[in-house]
Image (cartoon, rainbow, N blue to C red; front, side, top):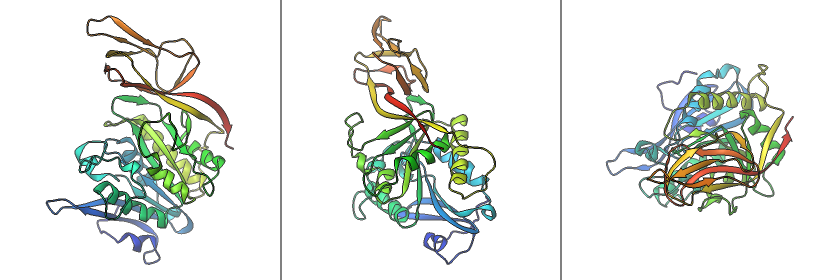
Length: 343
């Protein structure tokens, strides 16, 4: 795909006014004090045959980079002449946070992915959420929301899908779609789960899409504020498999996995003592009961804490930054899991 220099109105692209091809557009969310527009960039590939609208969203947190690059690479690989349906990409949905190199919207310090469906006359985070969600609500059939863990962590690519009750796509349909990304695990999440960090989890983009009956999930690609080529490639390959799974592209023989590891209970792991955390395990592995996840040494070099578990755990994410204070997160682990056939 080679994007044109012309800028089109998104409604014209996604409606009947423009025929098949590659387009670029934007979604206006507001203006800065200087008068500069706050626009979310949009790229669209419109195919020659009928099919679903696949919406790819990146950088809902401004320090999460790998998903942006995976979207770029996938869009570059798709020829509109071979496409059924439409692919819409908003690779940078939190534009002010990206410019500030922060997770949250700097103008109001809110989490954009806890702000959906948004408020048209609210704070900037709510306005950005509203502007984006109105387009997704109107046009999208399938939504992939890319994330990473925070910059202090490493993780193998994994998926998260939420339970949204009646009217939402079936769990089997969600697992079949997200398995295209060959995730280390697929975490089933309740938005009211006490095991998660505080916040309005029901304000997540994928959850609000599920409530509307759209197929939506999260893909986590490594850690934040950095480029990780292997994880970018995994995201790109996953998008290609997903497009074929949705019958948007012809089968090329690269099949998605037959099985996905579903995590049904997970939690963050916090340190009790401050000091310097040393890893004794790796993200994307299973840690056996009693084996050390890591140790913490004081500023004098003395061992003050060893972190282990009474049962086996899946290490979803693991801290790479060694400097920790009491109560800091050092890992994110799966506690209960099972294999699910997704053929």
